[in-house]
Image (cartoon, rainbow, N blue to C red; front, side, top):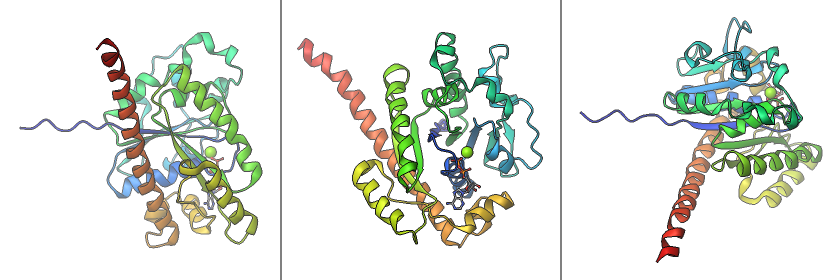
Length: 287
Ligand SMILES: Nc1ncnc2c1ncn2[C@@H]1O[C@H](COP(=O)(O)OP(=O)(O)O)[C@@H](O)[C@H]1O
Ligand SMILES: [Mg+2]
């Protein structure tokens, strides 16, 4: 009998330095489409606000969650940290205020501790059980966000179509480059996705165009409009594509997911070619 194919999750960190730009909502949309497509998805809530934990767990009690990964006194056991949700394909490791303790923004506070790599082994283990692992980050560059990037395949940057929304992206990109150089050479930029887009505001349309010119291929073609359907689905704690399956919002969610898959596939090919190039070079040098 053929061996069952092992899963190998696509691990995505959702990050921006601004709050309220749709970081959590992006994870929520991806998770919803995973459920619809029968793809197993684990969400790590790394934000002390615990928003996505509250959305996914009906009777959310903080308990021990993602903070366990950063607590040197705990040897985190994935099977006890992962919680089932009411959605058959979606699991979550919740976040709570306990994370505040590890939201250290000065690298001098954590650099020598090794804690920055604390998500790497657990996510490698979890990777065999899921198709997607989503890391929902707070709006900070801290030990927690560094740790997320160290353990991820891809960085997703949701932003609003306004100048002030884009400013934080420079710090995010600097951090991304730093993590690639120091810790995780395989980390790749999945792209910038404009979120909460208000078509009627003319400056947003102009800005969307500029953003695409500026970021080129790194800008998603899909943009996520600001729609009350999205908000309602969040309020009702049901992913929009299950809540209002025929709505425009659901269509956007599915388009967004499809583009993520296309981008991830393309970027993996780029990475593999680069790796092969690295292998070939020394052989050529010997010859
Ligand atoms: N495209 C959208 N349309 C309508 N409401 C949205 C949209 N994206 C996010 N929201 C709502 O805006 C608020 C902030 O979004 P959120 O994803 O939590 O931001 P962040 O995680 O970046 O702080 C939430 O209440 C969320 O439900
Ligand atoms: Mg959030």
